[in-house]
Amino acid sequence: MFKLNRYEVSLTIRVLFLLASITAAAFCIVNNKFTLLFFIGLVLFFQILSFVQFINKTNTELTQFIEAVQYRDFSLQFAEKNAPVSVRQLRRAFNQINGTFKQLSSEREEQYQYLQKILELVDTGILSYDQTGEVGWMNEAFKKMLAIPYLRNISSLEKRNLYVFQAISSLQSGENQLVKIDQKQVLLAKTTFLNDGKLTHLIAFQNVNEAIEDTEAQAYQKLLRVMTHEIMNSVAPIASLAETMEERLKTGQSPNPSNKQLLEDITLGVATIKKRSANLLKFADTYRQLAKVSITSFAVFYVRDLFESVEILLENQIEQKNIELDVILKDFDLQIEGDLALVEQVLINLMINAIDAVKESEQPKIQISAYKNTQEKVVLEVKDNGIGMSAELMDKIFVPFFTSKANGSGIGLSLSKQIMALHKGSITVHSVEEQGTVFRLTFA
Image (tube, rainbow, N blue to C red):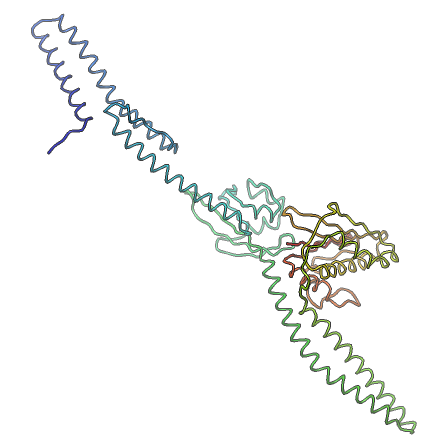
């Protein structure tokens, strides 16, 4: 059965009253009843005015709703309770649509905030920018990695870090590139997509330095085990045989002068073989210890105690070579959690290297300091004004067996790096030739 709603009933009544008024006005005109026509005309005028307002009320509500949607203002609510019959249902529909859009917008904002929090927590740096270079977003990991608090356009990066800027500019979508940032290996990965019709570039900066160092350390340890095993297995019988031959030659000396000279030469040769074999065995055994280093006593200790112990151990060398030693420790209660003996060994290695580096300086100076960086991690620094190192040399100094010293073993810095890895920390170096070197130990 056909049923009219209140809006349709109201519209029908208005139309009927308007039709009745027009009919009455026509009747007055035909019968020359102009006085009555005047009053009917006034009624007809107000009816037309009311009818226009009735129609415009719906259009006004619709216009407000469209403007609210255009500006994404879903907080607008249309009163339903005391609304005219003509717009009550329309307002109810508008409020329902607004509620749906508001819920969708809230869910979208929650997802955005959730994603943003995740990206802020990851260690991978994230940078997005459009085709004009305008930066859309970057996370805290990226800011810390490049020490940049704010970046409006990637062109600004050219002045701060030209090498990274060139790497970003040359990187194609879908490609990867390994770059070095502050002595750390960083893998750049780029992807491009359309966002609101605009081409957007997204680059991830992943610090792979630890992964590379772990892989290198494992490879070095395997190599050390194989080398020491083979060397000791090969040299031990030679040393034993040389010792046996030496003893027999001593007990079997001939009184014949010519034979005596020959035996002496043979004895000397065998003794040399024995000595070199013993040294080689000692050498192999020393490097075997590199693969066995481990934390035995993990505890919290004061940095001041560490500095005092190292200073006492190296006091004589420093004084004999007239080296000025500065110890900077602003926080007297600064502490490190780790193996004191191993950390002390690392610091001693760095100090010995610094002492060797400043031996030709006119005013030799070494500075050791400790502080907390921006990530609240404890950092120990050993700084000297010695001969410095080239970039090529800095890339090799942590490789086992490599040394730039005539009497060096090539084990000190490699061992130091392994000890720092056991502490979940890192060791980095910055050096300028003829100006000096800075070693930094950063603890987790």
